[in-house]
Image (cartoon, helix red, strand yellow):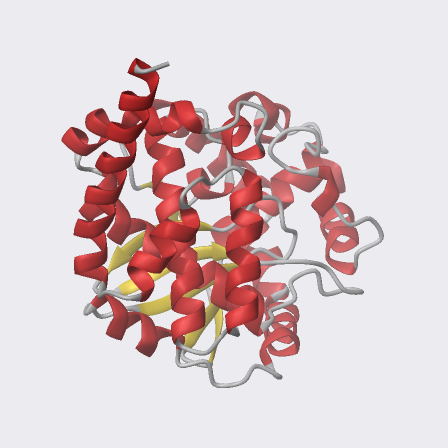
Length: 325
């Protein structure tokens, strides 16, 4: 059998997931560090990478490896697979690309004895998790988020030893919010878990579904406020990284709320809160200070309604000014 390896600390379930580690193997053996496997996260002479290279050295020519770059499988995409009876099954049958690649993956898993590799590495995975979480203080993060959103939130954070993407919200099942996480490297342990990193990542990713449900899925609002996007500097990093208005708006609100929650529950000082907002504003998230102050002085539910009003008023002001130019 093949199962997740986990350590619970500070109310958070930290996990090494076999499907994610299969992706790590594919990335290392295929040498795909030019695409979604970002080269600035790639660590040479790392114990884990060296072990992968040695164990799978005879499978560079395997069809799953050869085709890996063509299929461009990302971290969150591979989580559409799940191990069942030592085989990968596809959870989303409508994804034709993943359905087609599935046979190559299962062939690779069988031919290379990947399950044996993963199970042999279990002690190493536990060592990595313990090394990274031993010094964590009690953050009460799940409790505080549950209180803020008035909804049960347990945090499951999947750590990718060989990091290759930013954090991502992967879904919620029975109140367990699964997040793909991980930060920077140190020696042989690339994943370093810090209070600051956990707080920022967990709040940000757990906030996305609430903002989407209550604000950015409001298509009438998106239509009414789309001119907000015209006010964002074309040369700003935000404009370059968020090329669609609704994704820009959602991240703007999420970042504002994240800063507010960090400050409200004592994860950041007032100075850090203000510094964070200033940095986000320079990134290209206009009105983030005003929106953060709305949520700072109101409940989440009231903050959503007031933010909608604020955005519509800003668009009306912008349109009025444009007419009089």
